[in-house]
Each structure stands twice: as structure tokens, then as C-alpha cells.
Length: 214
Ligand SMILES: C[S@@+](CC[C@H](N)C(=O)[O-])C[C@H]1O[C@@H](n2cnc3c(N)ncnc32)[C@H](O)[C@@H]1O
View: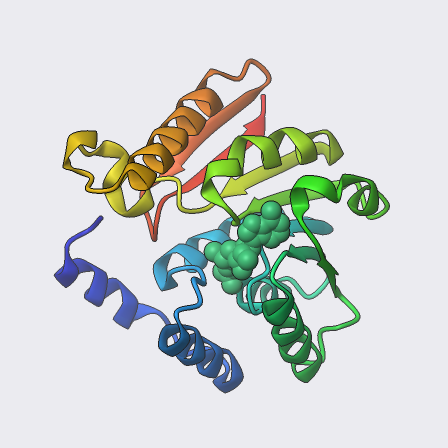
């Protein structure tokens, strides 16, 4: 979304991460695991460090990268994170244990669309981080928003989807892409119309929507 030159400049400004975290970044890159973009996670971590949530619910653990980054940034925060893919769930558990964070990061294996009863046991959450199937964002929001604490904030990643939401849909080659982009666009517009919430989209990384109770 920002041009390559600016992106490279911004990424070069980011301080080194712990070696194990950088190894996870390399693994994700080599194996096509869609972890948060470098500039995106920096902004998310900064916002979270200002908010200081006691408990975060993350939807979409993948291999545990963002959960680990959040736990390292927020040493007093508990993170509950749910993942649908069995292999990734096991990989996440291994990484979390290796980093000694298994007391504060609780992983749940399952589909977030059907896990509300299980997840409710951990509620309330001060932050909800939505980073799973983009076509289901509105559903995730509706299911888990009632579990937020009074000053809870919802962070949703990939809402600009490489800028495609702003593009003429006829330029998109596949029907699947067009449907996904339409759903994301509808989700973004819906967020902005909610009476009890205010939203802003930060065009960093792949686009992060920040939604807060009014
Ligand atoms: C973009 S990745 C998450 C990246 C991770 N948050 C990070 O930055 O390190 C999305 C993950 O969500 C998982 N996922 C997709 N739909 C899901 C669902 N309904 N419930 C739980 N996990 C889901 C996918 O298997 C995938 O691993």
C-alpha cells in the first residue's frame, strides 16, 4: 500500500527482534504461513502497549507468531488464541513452550465460528484481535464482541487486503477474489456504521481496523 521504497525504509527502522522470533519470521516466509506484516505488527503492539489489556482473545493463531509478540510486549497480559488448522496449532504450541510463554498464552484448537461456549470461559477480554478467514470477519465480530470488557477494543487485520478493497472489482481476475473483496468492503463499511462503536482503519501492513466502544 505504501510504495516499496517507503516500506523498505520503514522495515529497516524496526529494531531487531529476539533471535527465535526472527527465525519464526523466516520460517513463515519460506513456508507461506501468513503471519502479520512487519510494519503492521509494530503498530498493533504499540496500540496494545498504550491500551494495556489484561486479556486478549486472538482469532487465528497460525504458528503463534503474533501471540508471542504480544506476550513479549505485554508481560502482564494473558492471551487466548484459537486456531483451526491442526498442524499450525501444534507448531504454535511448540513455539510458545520454547519461548517459555505457555503460562500466559492459552491455545485453543478449533473453529472460532463454533467455539464461543468454550471461549466464554476465559471472558471478558479487553482486546479482540481478528486475524482469520477474511470472509467471516463480521461473524467473528458478532460472536465475540459481547465478550469484550467495557473499554474493550477490537483490532482486525488485513482489512485493506493489499489495497484490493479500493480497486475496481472488474480488475480482479477470479470470482473468489471478487467475493472476498466485496465481503471485506461490506465489513469495513458496516464497522463504520455501528452505533455503539467508532472505527478507524490504519493503512499500515495489510490494513488494521481499530474499533472502540463510543
Ligand atoms: C493470517 S493467519 C494468522 C496469523 C497470526 N495471527 C500471526 O500474525 O502470527 C490466519 C489463521 O487463522 C486460521 N483460521 C482461519 N479460520 C479460522 C477459524 N474459523 N477459526 C480458527 N482459526 C481460523 C488459519 O488456519 C490461519 O492459520
